[in-house]
Length: 335
Image 1: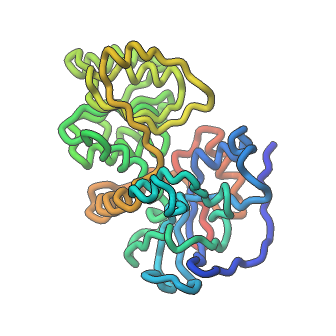
Image 2 (image 1 turned 180 degrees about the vertical axis):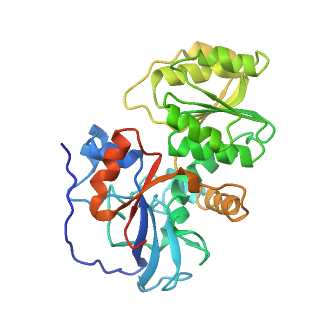
């Protein structure tokens, strides 16, 4: 059914420029589900065996030579993009778009383990009193904050969050906290829509039971939304989101389609949207903004933690996602 296996392995040791974390919590995300299903792009890229997990927090318990600014006992979250620092995007402060990015849990061993060794360059140090379960959610929350901060931002604007998985729900909360005039959430799953309402959505729409475009035009005086944050990755979702966007609006694409999709470029040319891809987080700007939103109490991600499962029962967490019962399951390691 799957290739998940719990193994006893040697405790890793950090080399120069690396740190070792005693993992506290690790989140199960969409990428992990793609690995679970052995999606073609994962099968082409990954070399097995591989320890999964990239939404990770832990306590630094060993520091390699040459590491500065991080010490034993620090509570850290992990940025999941290990960038080369030498390519043109890196040199232009676009490390999230590095040409040679490596990812924990895909290219190197990740955090579904008691200990993980990573480059110190991807460690974000949290305050000592920062809740550890929130530390494990900083990486995906940073994507939502990145999406809300691009282009025209969201302040004073009408925003559609299309697709309310964990990052979509975080985008709802971030958009509301950052001053959006209206936050419309859309999803086929009633449980996710209920979570979207709890996270601050002003309107929650189910495209399976409502005409999404018609409903949004009714809510926006026939104009459409100013900003779309698209997370479905589905062709029908992309088309509906485009039709719901006002002329000259801002279209921010997070969800990656699993196969090529067909789009009417003539419509895009005539309606003049600005199209932006949102990949990862701007390092470290998105982290600074995300941490401020949580530290100042403007966003509370705690309601999104639907299940906390011991590491040894990791398969249960995956099954909860498969069954549509989980919003955000966390694996508790040294919680």
